[in-house]
Length: 77
Image (tube, rainbow, N blue to C red; front, side, top):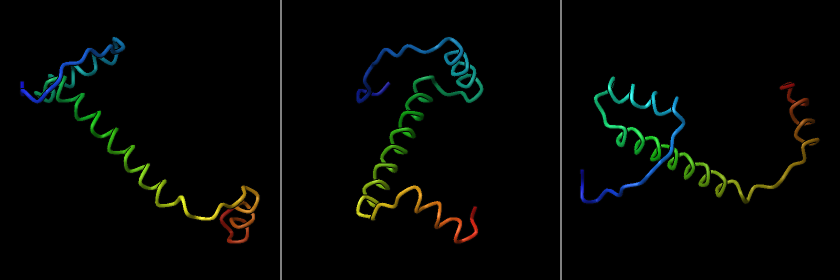
């Protein structure tokens, strides 16, 4: 264990814990490694979502009705 790691207590549903244990055995990785990777992926996805939101924040708004009309006009629905 690295000196740069922090210990945390996490409560998992029994079925999720069992699935993690099985994956740990099958992949020869620790539960900590698997959970760390999953959290990193989730946080990266959140960061990407926020970046996309920021990029599109300056776009003009369109009403739902206008969006439907546009889709119909282009034969999408």
